[in-house]
Image (cartoon, one colour):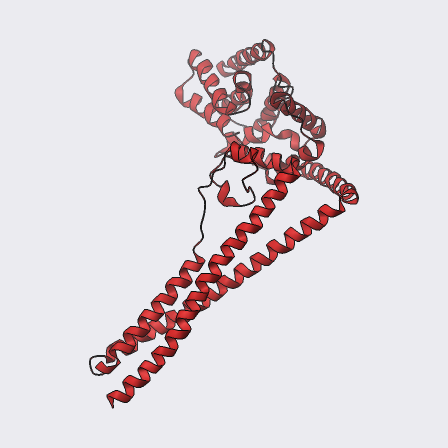
Length: 383
């Protein structure tokens, strides 16, 4: 038995003792899940015929990857797991290089997963091995139960199903081995969930016909607003293109003639001012206004935040956004309030765009007429 093999046995006993001596509400993220991830890791690692050191690194990371649940819950458990692994391995006099690789593997499992090499990819695929397995449904029920226990909050089956569908649609396996072995079954599991969700929606639709009408109203209004916004942007682009051409002609043709045709100076300057003003207003109409990218729980509780607009959450963590959307999907009043704010925000933005465009077109039209008259008078006076 190599030094790495004997140390893996010691790590296994260490992890088993920690999970066994810790009372926890985590019915999924316990020793059974850890052993499942370790077995999946060994399976994938064996397929790639990893050297002893790399095999030790990724299997050790599998043993420690969820240990942070035991001393702080799900939030940032990867960081605590990596620290626990480091403390143990340092005591065993493992090299700093190996320890860092173990920590990197553990940290890569943080959702959304972000592996950067084969070892990290192996652990990430092993951690979500169940998505493409036969026992996916049982595992999903355990995770559902665990979240309800740890958050002291009931999560409806429909909401949980939608959250799971979203996770599976965004997830992808990273190693070729996992893709070949698990992807097909994962898609089957996903299709089953989607069919269940469709049946649930069809059943709900029979009892909630007014809500369908409301949703149709919001959808049509939002679509119309988007179409009007596209039209405004096209109008601004037309103004910018036309005035860019005029400005180019003024600079390349008229300005060269001002030394000899000084009577054209004032009309030329006036035309340039009109063109620049028109372009400024057209550009202002296309400049987006973006909020600070954050929302807080107080806004969510008071139902005064719109999570459908990216400007209110693009700097937030996915976990916080997921919690907010979960609450919105459970609370129809909050959801419809968000849709109302979204339509209102679109209307305010459209109003600003069209006011600026009206000024731009007004300046361009009146200025162009005055410029033509001014040039005509200057030409006649210059003869």
